[in-house]
Length: 98
Ligand SMILES: [Zn+2]
Image 1 (cartoon, rainbow, N blue to C red):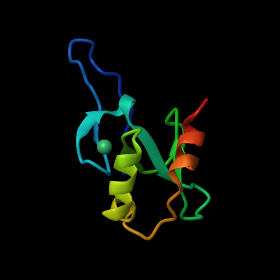
Image 2 (image 1 turned 135 degrees about the horizontal axis):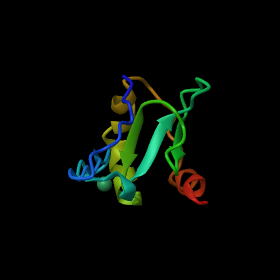
Image 3 (image 1 turned 180 degrees about the horizontal axis):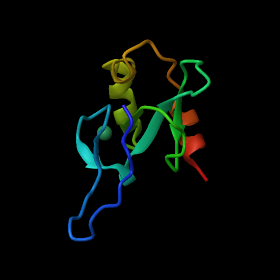
């Protein structure tokens, strides 16, 4: 599924809300960590700070509680419809740091 980035009319405020994999709250994607599958095909999930990696993204609050919930609910595997390798919370946080 390819979503084209069209110019948004300035009259319509378009806020891209995404659902957190942990708490299922819908939030402004700017406040969530984007996660993508490793484009090289390793099945590892990678945290993508500035939203640069290609591929289907999943989103999670920058909170270890949401991470724990997402892991327990197997939300990562469901998000990508396969068994994926989930990074530790430390790895996620470290890779989103500038
Ligand atoms: Zn959350």
